[in-house]
Length: 265
Image: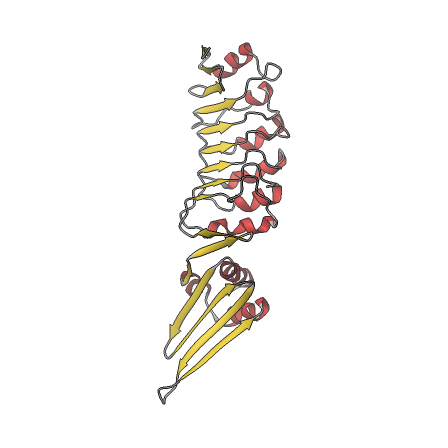
């Protein structure tokens, strides 16, 4: 296998994956626990006894073994996860939604988010009120099965959103409570052709940005917060005419659709 393939195998082991296989009279395997990589093997001898090995290995030693001897496809298909470790937290491998357990989580190593594609059923992720930044979001966007992504109250910037183009299945995006996001972010959102629901309350996006949001064929709803400086009734009526079949919902106030306004008050 290539160097990159070997790195991926090792990353899976470090994330909590376990590998074991058997060839003729020998079984061997790998697992990572308490910060230590373990190699084991059992070989049946002709006299009926067995030769057992249990060793602690360095990453470099495993890397050499994989690149010189083994096929990526064979090793990769036999890795099994009971649980995965992401930035020191343990998660069941079959989850469909990822979120750190703390209410305001601190991500210590953004690269740990590169493990999200190892969850085979993951379609939703939330990083609400976390310190997620652009490098972390870039890793998250490698999980291209995501349909729902919550980025409320994070550290992302306009330019960081360019990584979203990799999420070809994204339907729901929550950008609430990110005042650092401006109209300059809209050009990156236009790549999200599967998007159904966009929440931009408490951002700095204005009517100017909304006017750029054409050619998003599946967008059903945009959610805003009431802000007479950024949004006016007349402006939103005009914009809604150019966003056919997209409801612009102003939380607690009213909604705009095809040039018509319905008040909730």
